[in-house]
Image (cartoon, rainbow, N blue to C red; front, side, top):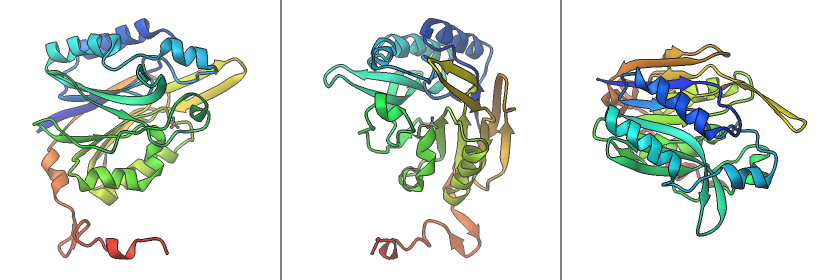
Length: 266
Ligand code: ACM
């Protein structure tokens, strides 16, 4: 059994230092093997200019990942979080998720399906969907709106992902919580949705985030759920190997019963 969890909080826009302190403080008194944090949780979400993205984004590895590596090494745990990435060689910006563990930075995933005005400020991801074997579990990463595209989850599940780590800033009430529950069920995997809460209001734009972070079992059962508003850190014990059994009935293995030869668009 391993302990997996989410930390739902309300990042302060533009104050990376304060957000990192808050994360470190929350982790300090927490015993988890894998903890998932929200999308863009070190910077805030509601960017309104290219200058802001340039100023607040960072290379990976960079100061934020180095700071968090110290935490994960000391606590001997894994963290998945969303952050704004600046790729120095191409000067492109990505809405990324990073995986950091007891031995440091393990992986980066760049959000493939950009939502709304993210398209103005970030480049669509170019990292293939990839599963990481942590020894204690095999994990895949998606960022927020990616959950609307069943192919993304399926690509990770077919590679053997047992736990889907999903940093998010959901804004469509109820939708993401329902969809991720279905994605977990249809792929028979665990799902850790780490959403943020609160409202951001900047330069005439306003977004309210829906909270309600959740941990879902492969059969769709809700193992933990946060309130729509307010801070929440929740951890549950799971057995990742449960996600290796794809049976929904004695005669139906969801992966063996697939018919990919019939799925091609005409
Ligand atoms: C989203 O992708 N942040 C809704």
